Length: 284
View 1 (cartoon, rainbow, N blue to C red):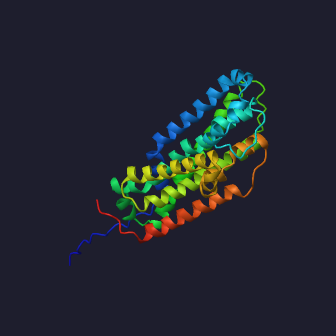
View 2: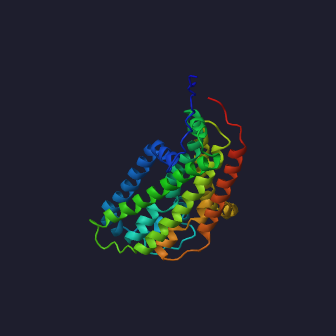
View 3: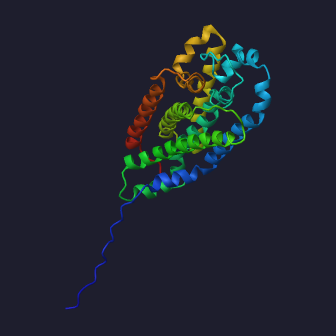
């Protein structure tokens, strides 16, 4: 008897490595490149203008309550604004750092999951032997790696400045600690963005909502520094727990403040994971 050939179904291969994280980082290369450019630009501007700024008497201007509220340095008592560390701290590690670079990380995190729904790669990935949990964690990891890249490039930009700026007197140990404090802020906004990405299926809407939360926090921080009537706003927003300027200039900070941001980021991220595992995914 002639044997009947049977079509044997080839089992799908399990994804190896971190393909989802790699793809998400590639999708986020434009905002990451923009963040790297601005980090270099700000550091180099401060480096080029440092000889002029150090000779000016900026103490009365920078010590005003309005300026300190905008820069997010109201809780830091800086007496010497002429040093390179003080100027780089004010221009780079004040609230503007969290507002600018934190918004980039927040947008990347918020848009990461909805973008895969829009382009259909989510359905394709989950049709293979890949769990939702792993998929979510790889997307979350991509935003954290993005924050690490921005942090590393910021330190690199400051190091390049020291090659042509004399007498910077940068304490690299405290600069590293300062950058870790700012990374705690990145970790927090990444968790916020991942949580929002489970509610919104449009990448621009989810990313924009995450950026809006960062901007709202900055407004609360500014109002809290401007008036004693709004001082209560400070302790309920994340910039208060990001004492980067204090660490770099005064070499001291409240040790548990950054852990508040890390803990809040973990809570938001894991709540997003629970929602994603129970969510009915839209069909494309």
